Image (cartoon, rainbow, N blue to C red; front, side, top):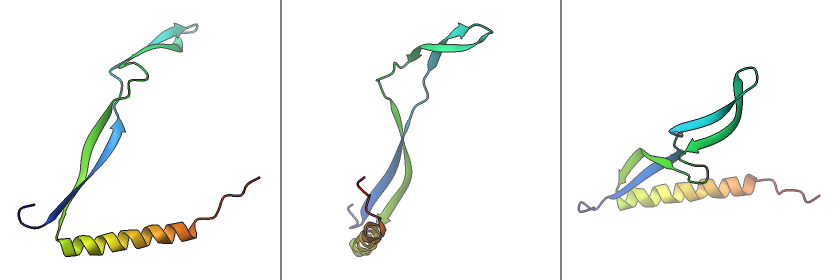
Length: 85
């Protein structure tokens, strides 16, 4: 940024709800097999939403980075190795 601060935006991607889903009407008036959906299966669409924007000085960014790395290392050390059976 021109003022010397760092901007970090954090987003979340979520699958969009289909516009329509068509089902077969099974015996007894219950939903049967799915026949189609819009958009079609295999055409994933996502909605991206901004969760939070963070503005910090380079000094604060370094402190935050150090803290974040230390938390990752703590989790790595606490992780139980998977047993090979």
